[in-house]
Image (cartoon, rainbow, N blue to C red; front, side, top):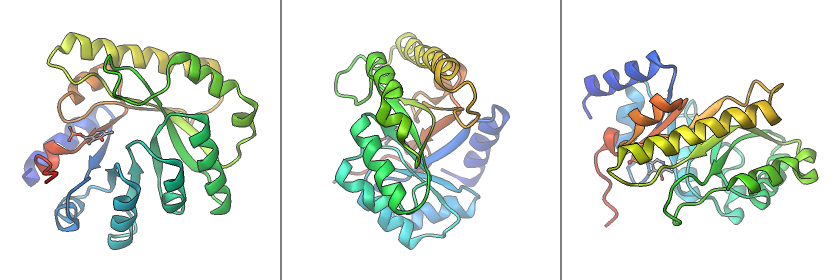
Length: 223
Ligand SMILES: *Cc1c(COP(=O)(O)O)cnc(C)c1O
């Protein structure tokens, strides 16, 4: 993406107060530095090891977000530095994050990932699981995690009506959860939804944070 296209995207997002997570997975440090030089400071990765390597190699004023499914045995590697974990989808994972954050003497901001897509391949909590988690004694006892909002991924489809319904449903759930469990918690304010192909629909539906990869860096090559 050219510098002017990046600026155009950022100004469009700024107008709506939507944060940009530049998804740099599979991309080399040199490519990420190009965006860094243009002012981008929030980057997202979906593998703990890649996240850790890039954190070590790159400027320390970058906010690193873990956006992908996170295995419990990998939490310890990212706990010292990660700024936000987007895809928390179980109480067990949250417990491990709390445990590792305790060791690091820090509080780790997290988003709870909701299952909104029709495909059953996507991770995430359903409503009942969300309620169970938020009402559990274990969750209430956690001192080293902070829930900053919800995250979701829409179905990968050309049917914009369906994508819009899924995003709108997540926004409605976000509002309910905020009113029901986080009314006195101003930090519960992020709704992470929208990727390269559907971020405009996500913003219309109330996203506060979009996770954009291929639009910024070009298609990924997994070869
Ligand atoms: C890869 C990825 C993205 C970005 O996808 P693009 O279509 O390249 O923008 C967003 N969110 C998650 C969880 C991802 O794994």
